[in-house]
Every structure is written in C-alpha cells, then in structure tokens.
Length: 342
Image (cartoon, rainbow, N blue to C red; front, side, top):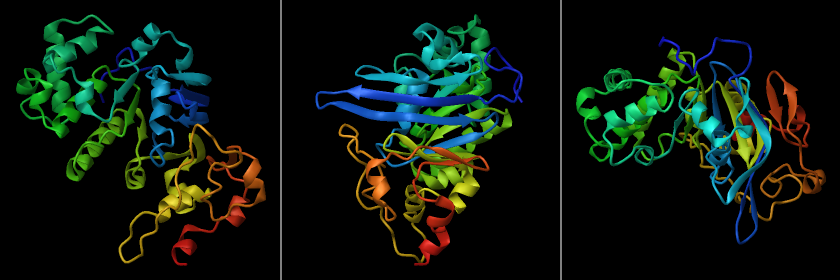
C-alpha cells in the first residue's frame, strides 16, 4: 500500500462520497435540458460503484457535476456532494481545484484530451504535484518513474521524456491513470475510461485501474454503458435513466434479481450464446420536453395508469437496495430467468 499523502485521511465509517438531490441543467436555444434530476447515491469506502445506463441518461453529466467540470450553458442548480467535511458543490473553483487531484483522481474518456500536447510527460507530473504541494523536479521525476512502473509501463524514463502524441491509446490511458493517482487520492472517478480503446486493451486498463484502487483501499466511481464491466469490477451499481436514478444496490443482487423494469430490460438485451437477441424498444425521452409521470412508461411492458402521471420516487427496499417504480417490485416484476425463458 502506498504511503498516505495529504489527500488521504484515516479510514472511518463515513462514505467516501455522498450525493443527494443533485440536479443539473443546460440552457439551450430549444429550451432547458434536464440532464441530471434529483440524483442521490453513496460511494462507500473501499467500494467500486458503477453508474450504468444508455447514452443520454446523465451518467457523465452526473460525475462532471460532482467534479465541478460543468461549464456554461450548463449549471448545477441543486443538491449536495459531500466528501469528508466538504460539500463539493458549495466550494469555490479555487478550493475545488485543491481537492481535485489531491483527494479525487479523475480519468476521462479520451486520454489525449487529458494530456497537454506541448509539454513532455515529465513536466506534466511536475505540474500536477506542484499544484498541490512543493516538490523539486528531481522528486517529481522519481515519483513519475514510480507511478509509470505501477501502471505497467516498461521503460518509464523514455515515456517521461516523451510527449502525448508519441503514445498509443492504451499507453496514454496508463499515463493518465498514473497522473490521476500520483497524489494518492482517496476517490477515483473514471468516466468511460476505455471508450476509445480496442477490446483487448480495454480489459487490460480496467484490470489495472480496479487493481490499483483495491490494492490501496481507495473508492471508485466508474461510469460505463457496459453491464459486463459492472458485473466484473464493481461492488455496487447505480442504474440511471433520463437523468434519474431508477435502481441501486449491490451488483450481485441487482443483476440476479432486477426490480426496475428498465434494469431488467438492459440485462435482457445482453447478447447470450444460443439465445435470440432482445433489443430495447423505443428510446430515451427528450430531456427538454421532459415527460410527466414515469420517464420509462412508453417503453415499459408493465406500465399502468399510475405511471402516466405520477413520478416514482427512489425508495429504499432493504438490503442496501433502492428502486424507483410504482409496481410492487417484489411481486409484480418477474424474475430475470423467467422472462429470459419466455
């Protein structure tokens, strides 16, 4: 385990991150896009939490809101994101920059967008460290060597002296991960970190980042559209639809016995050998003309009159699970196996 720096605090029973009522919108010429709508979830210490859902469901907007990376015409209009004694949504940009990197490491979709094309990698390590604490070039060089070795880069001296354009996509993402962990943050937020990579490299990167998170007892919030990734790497899952959390809980339980029809439909749409392919019908609703009632009502095979006009609240149902559905979920949502055999 690495030595604790300023960004790590002693372990406590408090969660690494607690998000409550997060609401974010984007003002456009067509109207207001309701991108994130009253989102609440918790990331426990040492847990890897996956956020899943189709494109346009608010996953990336959620984590970027937490990180303070929403820019005009976007705006966070409500909620809280508590990390230790801080509500990240109430901090000034200057104070939030102190937390990013030191306490929160961020790994974005596009590694080349995260690396400065005109500075060599050695200088980028130096800049990251010195934005939070004073360190000599020799110290940051040695740290860079150590971090690059930790992410499986052979010949780290050559990489430190090189530039982003000289790296492959997988190598660039390894460098970004090394930079994100260089100040030993307690929480890592990874937003679709393997989208731009081929399948083989995707698994290597996910094995790497999840291993480093677990090895040093960090917490991670992982955004992905791939349910297989969540099943393999995550402890908890948050399912989002139309900017809302519609189901949450331990991965093993949610994926074995989904209680929200949308979760069930996502799982049924996973290709299976020897089974006919099931596609989700319809599409995510327009987030400008946000629907009344349950946002999934037009696609849900179980929708009934109450779903048309009343928005289902996210409610706890025991065993660490929560669901937003008007059905009596334990009795009226069929088990995954029985639906799959039908």
